[in-house]
Amino acid sequence: MKRRVVVTGLGLVTPLGNDVPTTWDALMKGESGADQIKKFDTEDFNVKFACEVKNFDEQDYIPKKEARRMGAFTHFAIAASDEAMNHSGLKIDDSNAERVGTYISSGIGDFWAIEREHDKLLKSGPGRVSPFFIVSAIVNLASGNVSIRHGAKGPNSATATACSAGSHAIGDSFKIIQRGDADAMICGGAESAITPMSVAGFASMRALSTRNNEPKRASRPFDAERDGFVIGEGAGIVILEELEFAEARGANILAEVVGYGMTSDAYHVTAPDETGSGPKRVMQMAINDAGISPKDIGYINAHGTSTPYNDKTETLAIKKCFGEHAYKLAVSSTKSMTGHALGAAGGIEAVFGIKAITDKTLPPTINYENPDPECDLDYVPNEAREAEVNYVLSNSFGFGGTNACLIFKRYEE
Image: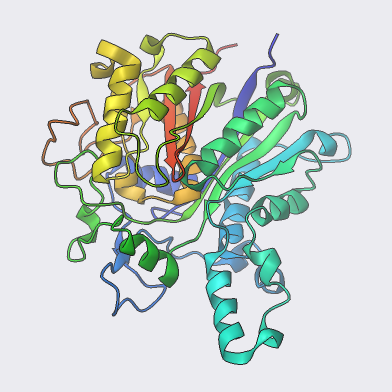
């Protein structure tokens, strides 16, 4: 029999708040985290806004000397992991350290360090590049630093699967525990890529919204006038535990992880397959893994990026996967409020999906004003909705055609 895996702790750093309660409250109010970029001068940029994390001081979590040796995405991961660990009440000591792992992914790692140190190289030569450049920039260092911080000696990994990375980290952690290679995992995603090079690159691809005069109305998933995503940042971390391990220490169980799927479009490096094949198959795989019927799903936290192609393709995939039940489902995109946090998105949205179960409230899709005939599902428009759902599905899709899907269930003994 497969080992059951439950969720016992949640942690967030987002453009809406630097913890779970603050973020969730803003989400329920339909607030947008978008504003003019403050991290760098955007005078020469045709996209001048983003969903930045606000009022975050890494020294509230990490001593100054240590913080300087880490990337910004690692700062976010540590803050969110601290909250998740405190929330779970999990204590790591000699008795369990080798059975607790970390799996925190990122799409890019520390873009800030790459840009900063490259500038030093060009202006001042190789001798001026920081000895801490590599360990601040590479993708697995968020997971590595969290492992060191908490003394977790079990599996320690990270994926760099673009915007599916956070969901892959949680799904892979679920499987690690399920097959018996760990009893608990600190897992999710972290990203800090609102940088000049990143914004310029995404803007050059015409992937970003250009609503510079109304940034809070720019991220509008499934709306007919959507024109691109709004780049975001942050971290979303969950604590997963094997059921008996959690029960033995009297943990408060929030939800159960029951399904995970991963597929590839095998179609194009950036554009989704317009047939929706990859997303349809990944949802079906997760449903099959959970051993449930498509009709059991009550809410989908959609990938919902606010790009013309993603939203209509994801809608099509949902209809292909769920048939007539697609029109009875609630489907919302919280990226309408947080923006798209790239590799952190899956971790952040997993927390939202779990909160939807525990709080019996579904987050809205804000800025939904002009229905698109090709996007004709129930997107929980503009206002949160009270609803008791037993199964929540969370989608994440990334460049390279990589897809991930997670299913969470209301916990029952």
